[in-house]
Length: 362
Image 1 (cartoon, one colour):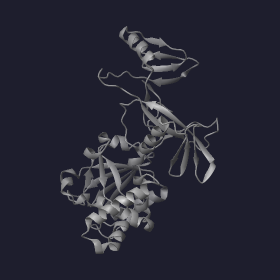
Image 2: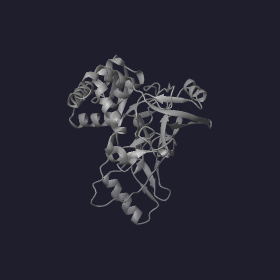
Image 3: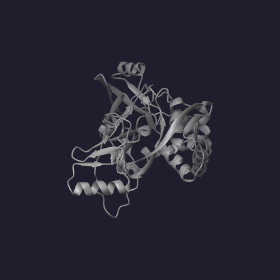
Image 4: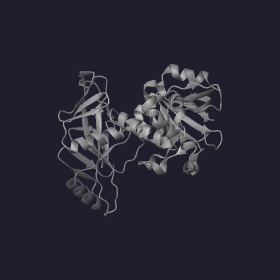
């Protein structure tokens, strides 16, 4: 395989690996077994000894390579990933190229459409023109960006940035015990007469999922609504958010309570960093659900700020829920923090490149 992300030597870019073709793999493997030092292909040379692929026309353009051994019974299929060109002016040739992955869910939607030979796909605020290779803003069709589909190493496993680096502004909390969610509170108030009618509430939650899920990806919408305390979503999302909030009281989740250190990445403005500095020793709350991971080295790649999240005690509210066993991506070791989670800001550190904010969930 050869390292295929835009800057293969970047410490901040997620790694991407692409497979050589079967014919190329056969040639390389034969050379490897015969202990050859170099293999020459049409446009590049593979330096087996130093594990590099070198472009013939420009020997400064090099990419790492690697050889992996797989079980002969395993069908190693390359994973398709969809990307959009994200540098400021995507059509300016003099500007260094930057490409950003679509979210995991969006990639699945695009790949399904691609396999079914669809020409257009709607993604929230954008129309993706698969046939002509660009996406355009719904509100302004002149705002277009190139897209591309690449095949990557299926064994490469990285945390989903869109899952573990959702920035949210903390709100003041007057109490170290309060766990409050505006949408849930409003929904319970409107439906208090039916407080014992759980079948009705479950049906309401299902209808809300169907109604909102037709328009956008649900996890994005829920967290946006929670962060903005959007009253228009009380009727459609209130019931669903309420039942998710019960995970801290569900007996089945008892063994999944997690009270060891977890990590989250965010991109914060200077003003937001200053707010956290001014809040040291005080209690704050995150309004939305917050996905964290036990794996620090992966989360550190996201955003300009690493949150180091500790827990005061093992309790229903003072802990996260380890959902590794429920996730389609168990290698992410995800721990979910409840909406309205309260925390104390302990300290803020800076090393010039990254901020580290230490908080304790209470």
